[in-house]
Length: 344
Ligand SMILES: C=CC1=C(C)c2cc3[nH]c(cc4nc(cc5[nH]c(cc1n2)c(C)c5CCC(=O)O)C(CCC(=O)O)=C4C)c(C)c3C=C
Ligand SMILES: [Fe+2]
Ligand SMILES: [Fe+2]
Image (cartoon, rainbow, N blue to C red; front, side, top):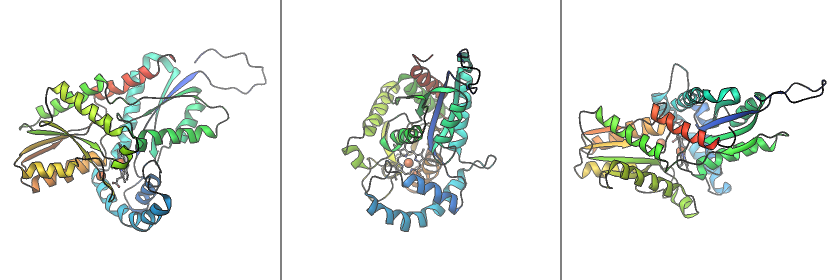
């Protein structure tokens, strides 16, 4: 912290001069039973950045259909990946660990830097962590949406929530938002190494590697969302780094939701088609996720593995996300140090 300014003696004591770094990931339910699942899905699926269908059309579908059936079904899926020791989803555990590790890596910058973490949906909320950072004297705030590829449904909605909080503050922190890192060398190299390291632990070699990204409705791309192009660029750079082409490393999109067309090719359909065409060994990497979660552990590691085996495939493996491994932390640290330039 910088030296105390010269306040008059009657002035209340204030902390000042620090910089908050807030990493934000998507969120997880508070529990896997019906009500916590329902609360989580309601918050998530009421976000207009996520579901762009007009309210009058979406409200009855959400409340009368989605929120009656999905909480129990998805709750059962979450239960299979739950961190029972801490009673929370893995996304929360990993995001907390990333925050702790990042703080250690930034220790050379002294106690001027305060690293914290939040979830866009559920807890700890963005608002509560901004308040906590301000209480610790952070006059500047760097928000890091933990998505390598920008999408309005993920990165922009983090900013919306930050702005909502700033709107109600008299003394706002000065704000920066980290840019997405879909084409940065440190990230591409980290994903490449994670693929190679994982393959070296298998007693078989993949014929095809899928780079599976979370999908969005195709209409969002048509309205100008850059997400598809960011995923394309990541895949192309990864192919170049690994010196392979489309036949070996293929981009696909997972987690389709609702009847609308989403970005294609779909991961599950590709896995099915590969198995049916006689491909026996497939590995899947999920470069759009900075932390393992339901969509990687369960959807890829279990659901898609089943699809592959059911259709005649032999070996299937889900490559873990970067999580808190050394290379993953290098990526986060590089992004954060770059964004802090001029402040430190
Ligand atoms: C229905 C619309 C959805 C859009 C658009 C969407 C975009 C999107 N999501 C992620 C990352 C994650 N999504 C996760 C779970 C999840 N996503 C949706 C829906 C949309 N996502 C739902 C309903 C759920 C919850 C689970 C379910 O009911 O199917 C997660 C995992 C959270 C966890 O706790 O494990 C992540 C991460 C991205 C990157 C993205 C757009 C680019
Ligand atoms: Fe999602
Ligand atoms: Fe899913």
